[in-house]
Length: 89
Image (tube, rainbow, N blue to C red; front, top):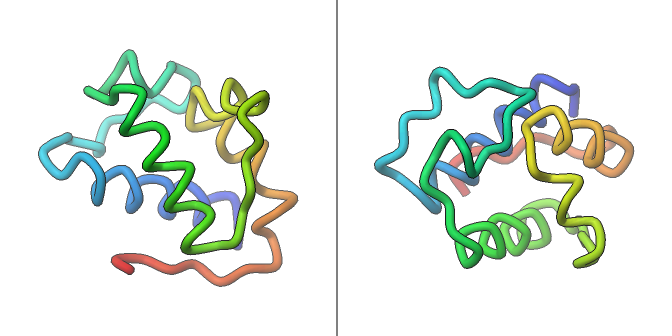
């Protein structure tokens, strides 16, 4: 996956978990939870979807790395660069 595809993958996962949220204007350097209504359970659901769809294990101590879209991309790129994008799974 490219960095752009990782952004799309994250947006697709968020859209699955929080379908009423508008993701079209997300700022990549601002905390996701400051832009959209995600609680701690929603965040755990995102982590679980990453594991289910892509086999990515995110240890609890690394959750802070996923706070922004830029952080998600930087953290996930090394693990997802060889994977295929799965949208609407």
